[in-house]
Amino acid sequence: MPLRYRNESELETLQEMEFAAEDKYWEGIELLSSGRGGGGVYLLGYVAEMLLKIAYFRFIGARPADRVGAYLGPARNAGRLLIPGIDREQYHSLRFWASLLFQRRRQEHRPLPDDVAAPFRQRTRRLYQAWWVEMRYRRDRCEAWDSHNVYEDVTWLRNHYAALWS
Amino acid sequence: MPIRKRRIPTPHPKAEDLLNRLLQEWENPDSTLTEPVIIEENGTQDRPIKIFVVWSEWAELNQQERSEIIMDAFEKLRSPQQSLRVTVAMGLTQDEAARMGIAYD
Image (cartoon, rainbow over all chains, first blue to last red; front, side, top):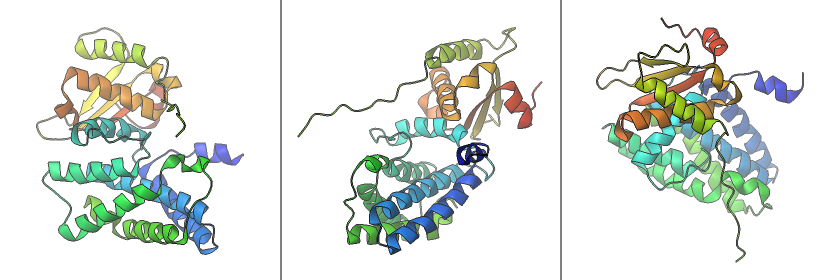
């Protein structure tokens, strides 16, 4: 069976996304370590997007086997209310997901703990300034320090993302 | 700087019609139509609301489009504030609902 059909036959669930994030994380690291900064950053940006989405969905009660699509409409409406003016960028915006998670937690009187909140804001802001989904149509302008920062920030998210929803 | 046109994603051609029909059904709980079936779960005070809409008309739309239409309808019927309580908005065809074990009276 062709790869596309093999992928499509798997439902897009939270746990499928979590596996994808882990795969893409290591593939991104491989690229960065072999000097392919553009490709590595691009993959790691997707990792950040997936981790932020999972964290938000888990915070509002999603379970690993739940389908992702059913959570997008409610997230869009919550975004309009809690973070008006922040573009979803077709649900790819790191700023959208990071801000939504942050504000939703505050709105439900369960803000992120201080020791997580500060680095979370700092790192997701820097990631947003490095990555957006449309960069795939641009030449590689990635410098060594971009690679380093993206690696550091995505690794922090990966190491702390369970704390983002608990 | 060159002027560029932003690509605005267009909604599915059936989206508006489906939204209007869904709204109509939601406002008429005594409707005799067999579809769409609107299921609200855990809708008590302060509990998250899960919405499932079983409808053959969803077949051409992806999960994201279905979820957005359901949320558009919900927000029109209730309020943006109420829509914060909705955590799941899932559109399913009859077959998909059966496969997922979504049972209803």
